Image (cartoon, rainbow, N blue to C red):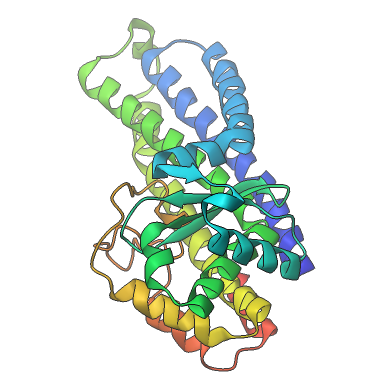
Length: 299
């Protein structure tokens, strides 16, 4: 477990560095196309660095606001509050802030930059439709994301994928409709083609990183959550109920879909799904897994 936490911390740093490199590469390609000079690359590096810091310290607020989550106190919902509090003590992590999403769809997610600055959000549909041991399984799953530092890694992914996609889209539109700068005539067509290819492939590359990271984290959180409650069947039943519903989350989008315990978009191809197949997750929960089995999934 501690090895996994250290691994996630290292991956967070590497992901931020990769984000800076991709942004700088995109802007460098843009400077070649328009002939604006190398100074634009330095500016891009600074902007990418600032955005990485923003994603680190404010990414959780962005995710919660996008989901329409409302923070609650103990008196607002004692049932949920006590469950989160008790499981946090069992997991050995500070109690996260608790948020409620007013939505009949059953889902939940955790976010934040570390266990001391974390939040858990649950939909009203989840609270109303799951039994006590099933809801405990879901909350334990989310607390495992907190303890394993998955929340930091996935929060950075949200911001990085979004910014890279927007920047690449802007570059492509500029190339199509904006024309080329005067000094760009001095640059070879090969460099221009490379720049445009980079602009097209960067969002896909970022998306593949998102998918790979998200799928592996879900397996480990399932195992860790089941060990936390000592009742894997609770989470297995919860996943069955969540997957059986046909109602997507009202405020779900592709940028934050990987945060949730189950894909909130519902209609997504398996290749581009941010989550492993639910039936496979349930199978592992009911197969008498060992911690080593699921550490292998996370590698």
